[in-house]
Length: 180
Image 1 (cartoon, helix red, strand yellow):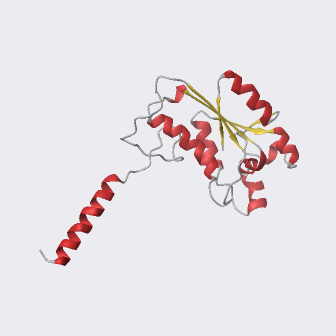
Image 2 (image 1 turned 30 degrees about the horizontal axis):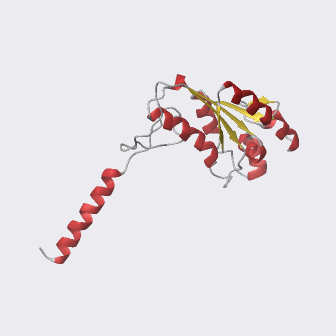
Image 3 (image 1 turned 90 degrees about the vertical axis):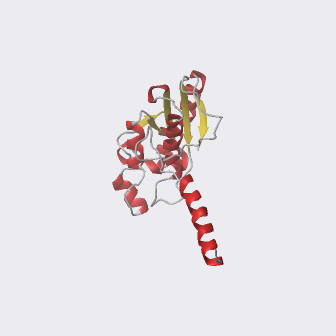
């Protein structure tokens, strides 16, 4: 075998191994968003027999307002990761409270376009999260601080008295708090 043939065979082996490990993203609970991958070697996994109660405290603004916020998409990823591990949708209770700089992700298209010059790319993610059973809430205090009204927002959002009281209400009820 000459060097060229050997080199091509080596490249073929390398890329076939790479392609064998490549996976297509999966969306077991939140359809179309938060794509995740099976990890066959993982021994630490969620327990599909447990009920998971999760409160996401989302304050981070989008890094690029023309793209889906990675923090909003991460809620979908978290739900899909549980689903891929065998946690059924009815055993996954997710509430998301947005406040601070995170609330701009909830603007309706009209108001988002005024602020960022594009339609809101996050709204389809929020719709998919809602369809998957997540409850999306916004801090009423943050709305006032930013001079926003309920009519400025995506219609699927629930207005909370405050993020602080939402957290102090649900954590004692057994919700784990995740900060995004």
